[in-house]
Amino acid sequence: MSSIDEDMVDEIRRLLDRPILLVGLMGAGKTRMGREIAKVLNLPFTDSDDEIEKAACMEIAEIFEKFGEPYFRDGERRVVSRLLEQGLAVIATGGGAVMMPETEEAIRNKTLSIWVRAEMAVMVERTSRRDNRPLLQKGDPEKILTELAAKRYVIYEKSDIVIDSHNGPAEAILNQALEKIRNFLRYEKRRAG
Ligand code: S3P
Image 1: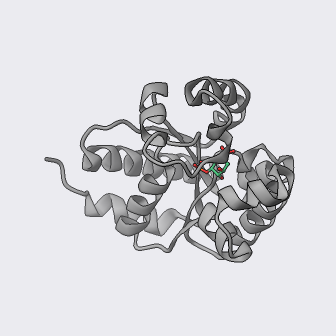
Image 2: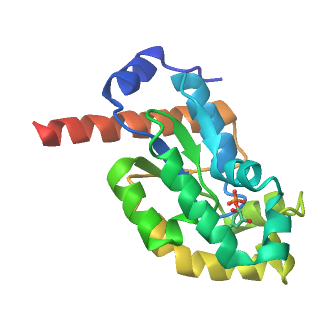
């Protein structure tokens, strides 16, 4: 079993100057990965879906049902914009957040962005464990996720880093993520001179 490289963690902490933000489809593992990255880097973790629910005092499914998707998207845009102002942190976003042009621009300019990518079968299996995602209640989840992938991957792939999330050993995936973050920050520093 691999263990966490403390020198790598220290270097990331020294170089990081903005929030780390995770994007990716439902079931890709953004929340889990975000929590783990936040824990090893000793940073606060926030999930934008949780913040939307707190602000609305309602679950996401209920917001969609009562007020519709555009209302949810507007709340999501405001919540993500607020979260980006909180300083160093790790933020997991809902799968559609980055599709709002204003949010996408803010993510590009103000965060170190990570696309958490997973195989379709993995996302289908993970999302089937709960029925809390209104977009997947409208038909065959695999078909819906495939359609969303076709629209969204062109945006997700503009992220600074891509991390593959599979059902393998969590620590190995986390180490790989940390290494990519460290390498990206090193590259940025070199480029800045
Ligand atoms: C959505 C993803 C969900 C949640 C909402 C809509 C989407 O978050 O924001 O149900 O449009 O992909 P997760 O990606 O965390 O499941």
